[in-house]
Length: 329
Image 1: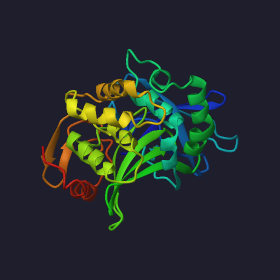
Image 2 (image 1 turned 120 degrees about the vertical axis):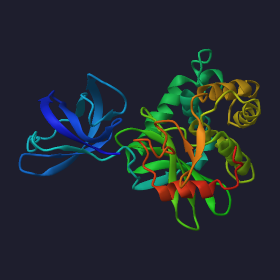
Image 3 (image 1 turned 180 degrees about the vertical axis):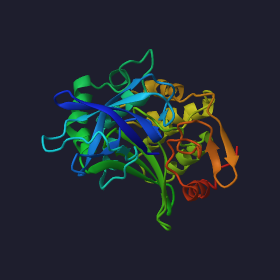
Image 4 (image 1 turned 90 degrees about the vertical axis):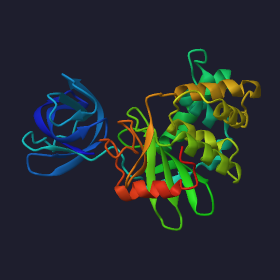
């Protein structure tokens, strides 16, 4: 959901400019692209680099709140003077890619999993999973990200990891750039050309995107394909669990043992850490007429009442058909 903001003031801070104002329409839930006008009526697109909140009431910030937003953008050039009398328009947080590069081969690179482990395999007892679980040095992992992954994410060619489910259906893990980096999960059909966003993980996440039974079904389906043996781990962060699940932990242990360079004797620790991160007892699912299985979580794409969801009713129906083989638990 986009927003429109009435400008109260602007302040030039050198390399950055702060735009202060209140929403008159929509909701704000994190960095994204915005559209501005200058005093001559010329439009410009800018990226919100960071934000601040004065008198916050709730999240996301909504029109009707008395919260004043502080949006920080790169200072425009001298020939663009922001028109404080025009509204600032949010362009949304889920921007579609212009191009992509298939990085499936990187699933055979321990350094990819070193970066993945930082996000999803740490715990209070495992503060450096890339080192303790994978035997990698911090500089190796950092350099792989800054020299290889980050330039792609910052370019128009975003990394994707397509995973075939069967001859028609597929899942896609996407590392999206833009105003805020997002690890996204999409599903699609080659026959119909339809796609739908299940969810994304970022500084401002939109989860859960998968029911536990859907995750298990996908992991089993991937076992029957030529996908990398550990590829199913990419989908785990899209699922919330009511409580730790012994059978799922065993499945993830087997997947973690297949990570290139992983210390097999610590695979169960890796799996346990991932499970621990996904336990959210309050997140529940229910079937809704016209929408299929929906999450009650306020940030989920699969919650038609969520301000963050960009899914249409047709896309909810596509998700329902995609997972038609999954048990209705």
